[in-house]
Length: 558
Image (cartoon, rainbow, N blue to C red; front, side, top):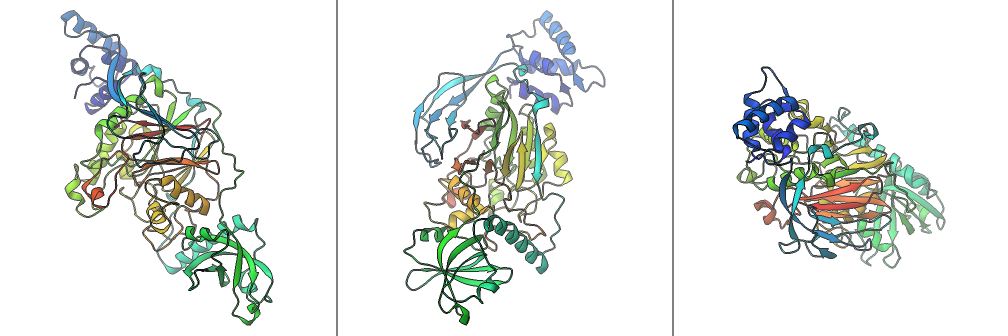
């Protein structure tokens, strides 16, 4: 592969056992034949040298110039990419179904593909287009590496909540009791400020006809012969039946309920309550939810983060060209404000994840997959702060919460000193709280809830449901594997400013009560398995978040 870009020059030098000064790489990239220049620079490297200096490169290039072997092209290189821009207003519902949902214009600048999304203060936004004719082809010129001049002193990246190194669960009965008690106590605390709740054991002894409230975990949901809904709520003292009449204004909220989530209800007790056969006729139903008045935090300076997920290196359908275009663009002046790269799981394709996966693997060995992922990671600018969490294709336990990678894999993925944390994790990036969660529970939410409230075409709506429940995986015993711990690491104690997920390979974003929810798509084209289950992925997209405004644009590199 021609070494037409600085990042590929760095990768080539690294493969030969050398690092190089930034200026040295720029000098090599500025020659007419960077491949020949690299050969000469390496061949004439000082003995025992590990870092190639700019002065060494100058002397080698000067000698080559005298011999007419290479020349200089003023340090500029060109890289072609497809440019596409879609703009939508903040009133547009975010969609990832491939349909044009906004005004499309082909840019004549040197921009890579761009889809402009959520505007500051908007309720939700979208805008993406697909198809080969929806954009124009333009040139993306990468300037010298020196265009990136990050303010390292201003940076701040802190992991606030992480299971890594804290797992104590053994799978015994007491662990399940412990995790559900912890969930109930923490979520009920969020609800008790809104209702004057009583324990179910006390309510069973109250006289009939009175008003009361219950905070409980949903243990059962069933419909009656008349079309009403009977919800069984459980707290630490017992269970109690609650009836939601089908003609109540809030009755459609029952469609959003999942087993094991914590809610509150207010209502009136039946007249025979003190006889032991009572029931609560529900007048209001509450979720823990995000306060409508919530005001998100923002950074104190103009700085950006790229949010990506589901890279799937090792798959035959991994989009290497799209990834390299993305990495090349990160070196340009247009991307100089992007100082953080947050990866929400599935760095590799994994092994044995789904039936007949071996037929679709380009790299069979799981460790070789991570080695190759690390090589691709080296293509992004070395000055970027990188944070990664695992996903269900990664080599960690499948049950959530997932601890971060073990030491062997951390050593393999050491490029750019990437930070590795568990799934999920709350991360403070310059004052902005970003909840990173791979997103396996989205499958369950989408399967259980009506299509208008959660679907693969609009994955952010399923994320809204998790924000409403203040838990990233509320239902136990379903498709999502959950590990019992002393503490429920899946509860959202604090409201995130940004909620970032992946897993479903669909692009979608919007704002829920001022929280930006982003599902970032993938870097893997459709596999045969995905065809068999009717998954049409949104691949090669990179959401770019302005941390100072929480506005977002989405760049397309495929």
